[in-house]
Amino acid sequence: MTAWEYVSRLGTGWNLGNTLDAHPRNDDSPAGQETAWGNPITTPEMIEAVKNAGFDFFRVPVSWCKQMGGAPEYIINEAFFSRVKEVVDYGINLDMHVILNLHHEDWHFPSDEQYPAAKIQMNKVWTQIAQFFGGYDEKLIFETMNEPRKTETPVEWTGGDEEGRRVVMQLNQDAVDAIRATGTKFPQNMTRKILVPAYAASAHEVAMADFKLPTPDDKNTIVSVHAYIPYDFALGDDHSKNTWSAELEREIDELFARIDKHFLSKKIPVIMGECGARKKYDNEDDRAKWATYYAKVARKYGVPCAWWDNGYLDGSEKTEVFGLLNRHTNEWGFEKIVKAFL
Image 1 (cartoon, rainbow, N blue to C red):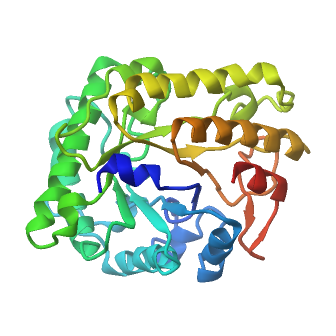
Image 2 (image 1 turned 30 degrees about the vertical axis):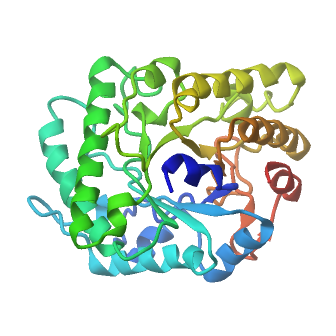
């Protein structure tokens, strides 16, 4: 089926955040990376809890940079590959769709100066991933990058500059070319669904307006967008902005209207790969109201959404608490939000 048909059949998703995408400081073993940011080792029971709650797909963010050798081959650690496969299989074995990506990678900084080296590494990394997972069926989706952006610059989160947006498009094309090139040996990769982000997977008007699909005649690519909107309520650090009201609905309406304008109206499918509203004091009821409205509008437009669960159910005011599942007990910490989002 085409990507448009595929996305129309997806339900609601969940992210295994701050886990395989962590950056270890001292222990570079697969287990050391998986637990570096405070989350326990992922188990089949965790993903069973996600499936049993009603989630249809789950996203596996992975940082590969700490697990690969240097130029020119960038060989990925076999033990880490095996561990990623185990986690992917937790979902596949439950008949879930799984998104596998590149996450928290700093080597593909989108500039003209960095691009020649990044292109080579992108080809090497995605060729290895596509070959390792080449035998999987269409339940496995590849995502070229997470939020490619010019980190620690004034344009990091503003939709980028012309150079950054252009280089992100080039890197998307390079990743798709690498994946498709493995199709002679792994035919599934010729039609595998591939998620491609705009600059920073941004919901800004300028990022969407400048976005171009890699290989436009390839009917198996999907646009990835991330949106924690309204920002002050969903993501901002001001904990006094913790109450939901009907006045805040407008920003969500405008978000999906932009997505429709630039993509859906052109039959370009979209997955909201990350969204959520962080805990601010005891505001579960308000977050559930947000989740109800966000999910309702997304369904109206036909955009599947995945909650960003970073495993944190509590913390200081500086902690971005997005966790829903208690990964130590496999019980849901905020059932009202889960039910609302689903």
